[in-house]
Image (cartoon, rainbow, N blue to C red):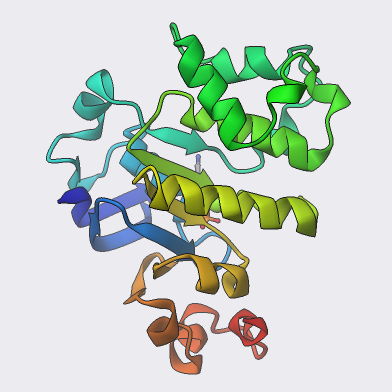
Length: 237
Ligand SMILES: Nc1ncnc2c1ncn2[C@@H]1O[C@H](COP(=O)(O)OP(=O)(O)O)[C@@H](O)[C@H]1O
Ligand SMILES: [Mg+2]
């Protein structure tokens, strides 16, 4: 079943196109890594899928519905870029953070979200008392507390230590494999996600390529994606 589809999507800021002619079909249960240089339109793509912004041309559909209609009845989980590095002086507890943004949330869903990210023991701690990795997990728990079918993560591994990153990857794997959640993750950790994601989208205002990591992470595609670069990040894979 198609979870997300974009057809001939264009989006511009100040009459400059940041996304052009995007055509994408994302199957339910997919684990997609999205890579591309800064300014490639990765965050903009996620915001279009969420219905926060609307395409200037073309169509975005979530399970066959416009995003704004879809989210009236079904949530989409979202971890915005750099959120846990920006919001941490907030005097709220982990539990309050996870509940925030929801009108009401069942206790079992709250407990499940804290449990998935193994932060149940931190529920009464305030954000300031947490490490960067713990804080990121609290924001991730918030993103899944509504039990979404689709989870969008914008650079979730930026600014966390290697151990937390390892843990986080395991948790995403569980959410995708055991709970069937469709995951889209924007990342610069190409090498890492080449092992994790089943599919990689290379974006640079247009779709440069899309496919299995082994097929995509080749010099010719990376040269198209990072034309300025002579050392390609996938060499560390
Ligand atoms: N609110 C905005 N107003 C004007 N330009 C923007 C705005 N948000 C993003 N842009 C521009 O759109 C392009 C794509 O941005 P973005 O989607 O954030 O890229 P990425 O996430 O791949 O780094 C960039 O050139 C950025 O400067
Ligand atoms: Mg971005």
